[in-house]
Amino acid sequence: MPSPSESVQVDLRHHEYAHADVSEDARLATEPPARAQVVCDFLRIDRRQVLEPDNDFDAARGADSVAPADVADVDAQIESGLEESRPRLDGSRPSFVDEHHGGHGERFWPRRLALSRSARLRFPVADDEELWSGRTLAPEDIFGRRAPLEIELGTGKARFLIEAARAEPAHDFLGVERALSYYRFSRDRMRRSGVRNAAVVRADAHLFVSGCVTPGSVSAFHVYFPDPWPKKRQRKRRLLDGVFLDTLASRLAPGGLLRIATDHPGYAAELAMLLQTVPSLEELPWHSLPEPPPTHYEIKYRAEGRPIRRFLLRSVQGSGVGGGPENETIRTRNIAK
Image (cartoon, rainbow, N blue to C red):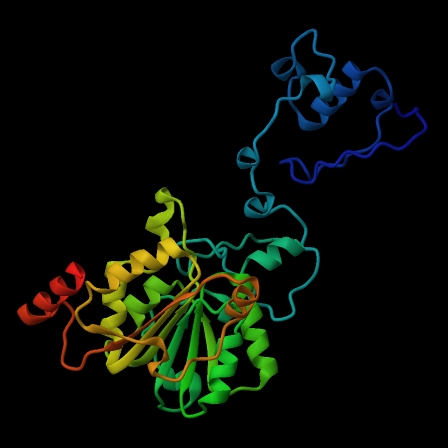
């Protein structure tokens, strides 16, 4: 127990009265009940409302266990009364949207907001870090030219985008990444690489492809090692389902390609069945065309000896999404096999 001459520090930065001056009180060095009373005084609450008469404020005995999910995220509840710790260099106002937020363009900027280091890592601090919000994709505005466009959904560490752009200078490669940390990593790595025909946008893949990509405008889609969400209750979160596969097929130009790779056997088995239900896509042997550069995760999984299942599909020219009776018959026969 500290003596009256010792300094006692109380961290109340995240309390609603954090702006109040907190100084040492001699009663903090006395018995535990008195210490509890001083803390209650600081918080402006009645000690009788939170403590039983025989509770001596012993943390080891009196504290209840709290689940992490029950603890509020301090960074998500930044109070407007906090002093701004350092000036922003670009003067921009970050959107109060983290990488898991489902909305687009929602802004929250208190008059005097201090962003902690963890908050700066989690929230957009530049215009390009905002989630793509409904604008129709115009590749010529990004690359400054018209060229065959290939899109990778989920960039990882951007290895594929950089190597593919170097190998195919006549094509443009666009990465779509929602997670802010991976978006920043990919963006910075591509800038350092010096490739001019590769770029990345921060967007939700479902919303971006279905709402912003013009039908018939994409030369190839690449989806490598998407999250398999293996638990049954999580499967609705998977990127690739029957509806989205139809959407991808509709955005491909005639003869366009869809490449998929996964290391999860269950996901691969379900994809094999789902792909049979998209009549405008025909499956080709993976090695029938030149293989794309491996991603970072593919190199890692190969080294670990994991089996990798790959799918190569081509848009059938003249087929609309849904197909006609002939395509429906072929599809049914393939499923029966």
